[in-house]
Image 1 (cartoon, one colour):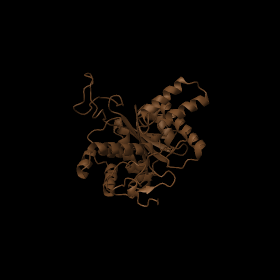
Image 2 (cartoon, rainbow, N blue to C red):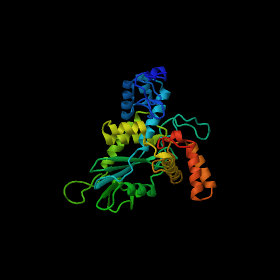
Image 3 (tube, helix red, strand yellow):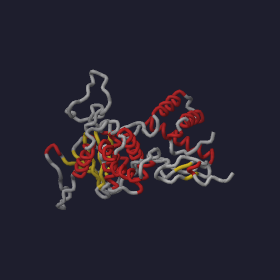
Image 4 (cartoon, one colour):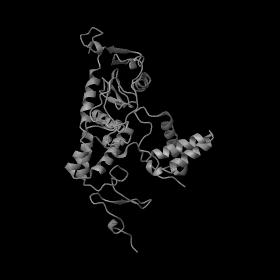
Length: 359
């Protein structure tokens, strides 16, 4: 029997992309394998239009109508893409010498979630609750931080805009030393940075010149403008569920900093935070597995700064199982590592960090 030269005789072909066969595992793949578009059978032009629409902030309903696609499937695809962008947001120190910080409060309830409780009816109009908002009262605060030097902007969706959360974020993103932070008079910024200048919006002070050079450098108008642009971006969707708000904000932050769709942005959209590397044998795979397991436990116990304590790219059920077993186990390193590895092995196909695990 001769070798099979035509893959169409041996496997299912993709309609628009060439199919290849791996010489090691003999499995077939296309250039979409391992991406968020792996299970789609759309034309390349349709995929490009989807990428452009999601990056620009077009609503799912409008994209479904224009491209004649299923709205529910597009909604799931949008969640995957925005989760990838959220998981790959930068976390290193920002560059620059002058920074601005400000917060805004965005109405975000439980859109499309049935309200079974009579005491918790759905809102018929906008949220008109007085006072500062929080995640609990459907007005989660969004903290923005801008570098005047690089013009990069970062956002965090918080439970509360309190002093500990604000200080933790500023200390983790603004370099210490010869840098200065400009904010308004809100009390949550007090003590967040060693060199700190404020303007008092309550007395209609929007900018001030402290050094006498004729330029009013003390202001946070850049954050105010960025917040207005963010609200315009979110307004297209006619309301966002507060659980997914951080994903929409991450999409806006990505495109605001990238300015255009680059190869790096496409890689973040398609692959997220997964690392496509070859395994270095069973020992290397097990070591990577335990590293991922310990990282998951850190996320579970300490929580994440950006509104959610669990990354949705990993099944929450597996994290719950891991946490439960971890709490019940003896606090010995070997037993904890074994339990963590078993829990992650059960969900290894959801984790792109490890390609294959030896039995």
